[in-house]
Length: 152
Image 1 (tube, rainbow, N blue to C red):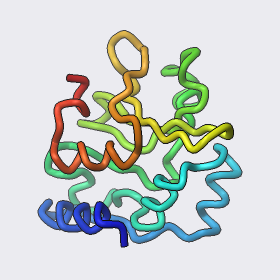
Image 2 (tube, rainbow, N blue to C red; image 1 turned 180 degrees about the horizontal axis):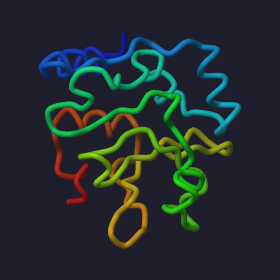
Image 3 (cartoon, one colour; image 1 turned 90 degrees about the vertical axis):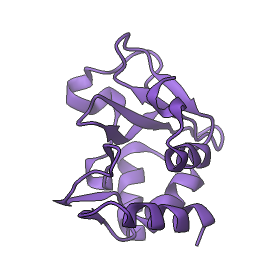
């Protein structure tokens, strides 16, 4: 198990009532990739660790973050009829939100290279804001409750 995944398990255990879904099945990952495109290895590894939060119980962590199950993930340009789409959102996959969609987080999918930047989507100006250069950095910042995840 990746060390960050162990840290996540411990962190999530500290939120009363939070139910974290188990690992995604490989065939479900393949269905998601067929629908949205190739997933970065780091993100794939995360989903094989946990397929987001369940709607049962708390539904979000103690800070208001919700990691979505794969069944809820969508490309930004397709989410809610494309209401959050722009020229820069074509390769972004939504995977989490903050405080009942005050904003959301999306990972860049790219056929060209192993790109796994994470962006804040749904900002006031409508322009996605990069919060981490890698998914691993996003998880580290999440565990540290780093201000970059809030657009600071």
